[in-house]
Image (tube, rainbow, N blue to C red; front, side, top):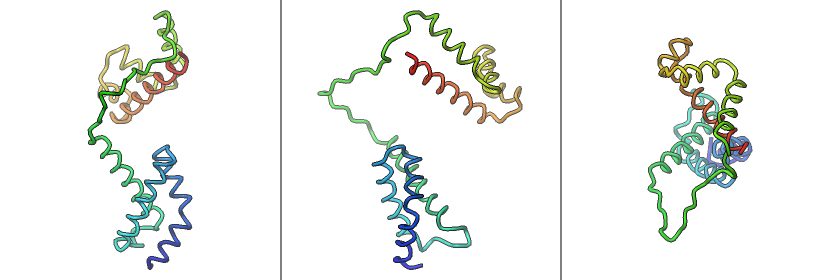
Length: 165
């Protein structure tokens, strides 16, 4: 496949690659930048592509995903520069719960609405003070799965509490 054929293939699949980039970045401008970097990488590394390994689209998506991961790693390593001239205001909810009881009731309502096994994970972790390993053993599930589900429940709870403020 020559460079002209590669460019034609890219043009034919640009929408699918753009949607994937948008899915990863959640930002139109960032997705477009990521896509440009991906096109560049595809053109540079096309000699390494082999049809025996699979079709071209998954290979291109893998390059796009790796570009995305590399960007995120660079962002984490980059020092955050804050100007002393800027005033940084803390982000706070629009209003606070007037009564701590209101917060407790909101959390209890959220937990009651959970499905299994998330409800069991919360019960074992918070109320019974079990470790993630102990929870994984008692539920017969991988520890990483328990960790992901627990983090997701906490994220959902935080979102729900902030949204309802």
